[in-house]
Amino acid sequence: MPDEPEVHGLLAMMLLHDARRGARFRGGDLVLLADQDRSLWDTTQIADGLTVLDRALALHGRGPYVLQAAIASLHAGEPRDWPEIAALYGELARLTSTGRARQRHRPRPAVMDGRLTTSPAGGASGAARAARSHPVARRL
Image 1 (cartoon, helix red, strand yellow):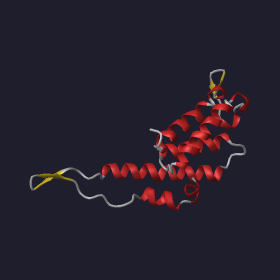
Image 2: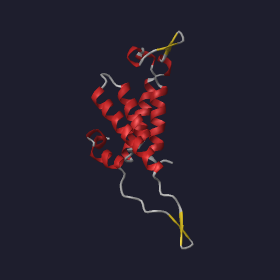
Image 3: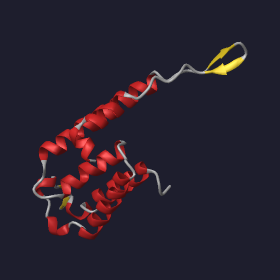
Image 4: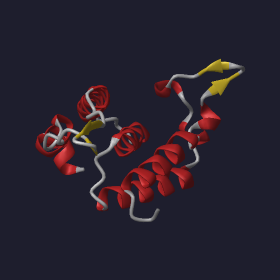
């Protein structure tokens, strides 16, 4: 699926998170991101993840995997841009909560005059409108 931004977003997210695997545990204990030894991070894998994320963004990806990959890319940076990370988490929360609400209110098939129909869809979702208007999402 070379032209699907969410597929690229998922791969980018997986690469970026896995690149830090070697630094996540010390003696069986979880090591928080701020305390991780960055020399144990796989910088080649981080670069690969950023390349894949760039492809997802070039395909105008704005879905949950692309947002999560963007967050992971910011976690890998130094210094961390906490306001931008927080804005992306907020965008992700809005996107996923709107998606859940949309699934609950999805048009149900109905039989009218012997035909299977559904109620009409109602335009762009709130998440899509927010993604277009949010300053961080516009940069994505």
